[in-house]
Length: 210
Image (cartoon, rainbow, N blue to C red; front, side, top):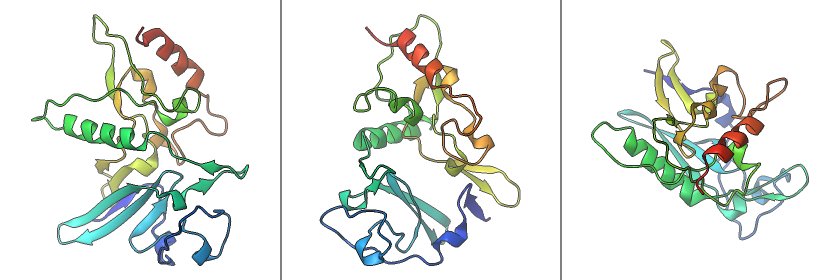
């Protein structure tokens, strides 16, 4: 059974270069491999502003691994500012809790909610979200980052084999889980799409704990 991660071109990894260790973060716009650690070493098929993703084959099938960036791998934005990932450890812990919760035999509870990326850019990023309790069921388990990059399908049957990256998962009002998987691109409004962040901020204000 062949699998692929939606939105990734396998041909991108054909010319992968070996990685190099740096003590400080160089300008990510530099093109020389030896001066730029933001390159894809063996097994790496994607690097974002926050993570590196790897795929390895074994006798049971493909194995996917992701890791946080080291400081030398941080990117620069268009303004030349260093992009430092936020709440990395908290998000990874949240993902572990979400995966455990998804197993029927496990009764683990999710930790404090981590704001979805598109919402976190509009609030204080270094804080988790605390909701007040509701007398009736109001919240549902939301993935909060359902872009095509996070859906693995069978190339032949198009069966969904896995949903990745549960770092932003949590129990939220259902408005939070927008179907970004319907088109290529990130889990934010792009082009002519309506930006739902103002509405979500209103929902957060309504439900936030005192």
